[in-house]
Image (cartoon, rainbow, N blue to C red; front, side):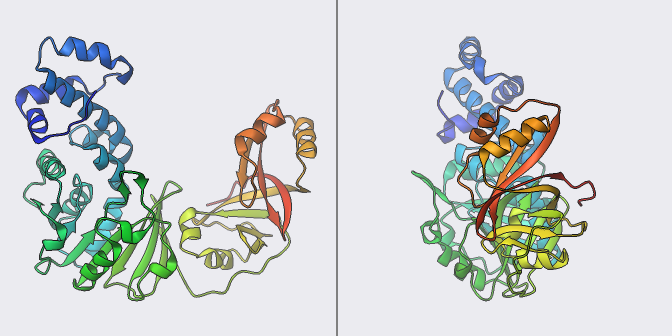
Length: 396
């Protein structure tokens, strides 16, 4: 089935007939799409049915980012679903903007309006700009559908031609996907990161959303760099201007816990203690493992591996804690024998610094039993090692 590829098809979805069709397709099974399409085309124009089915699929995909209540009222393009900010992350960022005293934002490269919606819900007036006519129409429809049209002005234009000076802040989310997939070079973003940085420098406050893998050396000296994870998955990095120049921060959602850099040296390598801590990905990306280790009175198991070890269990929001029961040289035959002896039927495999694939390892172990164990495949002081344990009960 085709996607919603033109404005006429999109506008047909906004008609009463289109709305009824979308409502009827809310819970449809994509596996039955051919039969559903054939049935609906007997009662509705074929173009409308094609557009509605495409939109229904996109809405189902969008639930993971926006939640069912919003996703089934909103309108999406394929790129819009792919590139939109998760609602929880957008709400966090909007709250930071509001805390800075921002009352109006020029949202450049707004896409289907996910960030504009979060900002408007925080009480901030938004100019949402996107150069693609269909995407801009989707953003406009979303503002209306969610009752935010009075706070969101949508403009279809080239962001490089927008005068953002009347606004308290600029937000830029450059396109990081092209015809061949994900773009890793910041200067290949659309618009390039260098343009976004210059736009940020001209504003009282600014936030630039970038890929979490951005090299630290690409961060301007006057920017605060923040890495954000949600539910343990690293979602994005943000360059903030007008906040704390040179600062590095890791923020973990949904708790909102935020770890800031203190300029600490790399942690010392030490013997594996009773507990192993696995830092959140945002902490690792922000290069704040030293700060996390210092708070835990811990060290590293290896100078190149981001596992923290300590003798005491301390609650921390920045790392998952495990109690280690065994430290063994890497040997799959010995591991298999040990798991069989302990009747391990559920094995969680974690790895850093190992080429072994978790699924392949589980298959080779031929697990059978009532018990569960976690194995860490890693290096300890340079030597390939297996650490066995289980989640520590008092981890926080």
